[in-house]
Length: 305
Image (cartoon, rainbow, N blue to C red; front, side, top):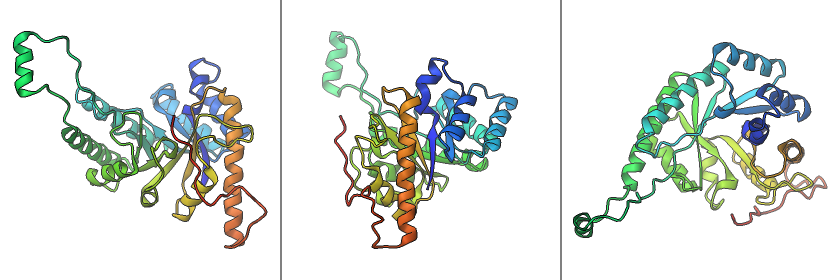
């Protein structure tokens, strides 16, 4: 497994103009010695060809892999769906230019029932008899699945894989079972999984997803002094991924209140140590302890607050 960082980890620094994308890329390569990066659509300053080639060349010079592009999209909103799909297709084109093999996307936010003002007498009587119109989850799921399929077909033509990420915050796809269903119903090999364990309501049922996982996010909100996370026990979780055959990127996705310039390097050092410990144990063979107490027997996860 390889260690990288999503540019979302430094969103606060980008928004306050303390750092631009070029400086962040250099820090990832030189200071944190990461293997790769994920570029979020919001942080790519221009889609002009000359700018994209400059970013690609910088990463090549720094021997830093562009592991993927992240797009914040919503396919569940019927009024925005077509525009959102067009935007995802555009970022697939950009990913092909940058040489990024993966475009990370969401299914969308579950639509809420419309809130209307107090109806008149006739309208109120009509609703009482026939019921008030509410979003149909089956129709929403069907439309989302078809849009995922269409976008994945476009990605395939560009040699890019779409990675569907779970999202518990009112997301259409939140649980391991919903991820499985989303991949299945889209019906294409070019839609795979981006697993975000910290944003799952529970971690049971993750193992069947591992063979189709092409990206994994290490979302952290509170980084301890030693770089570990307060929510998940990453050593055992990464061990499970490795035993399942996952060899891809672990992308740090920090969204806490601490300055990312101090929190993210700590998290990177910690996760790198975990990956090195796992690799050492694999080389030594089963039954070896290596005098490291980092790997527990079970995943320790605190409830989501």
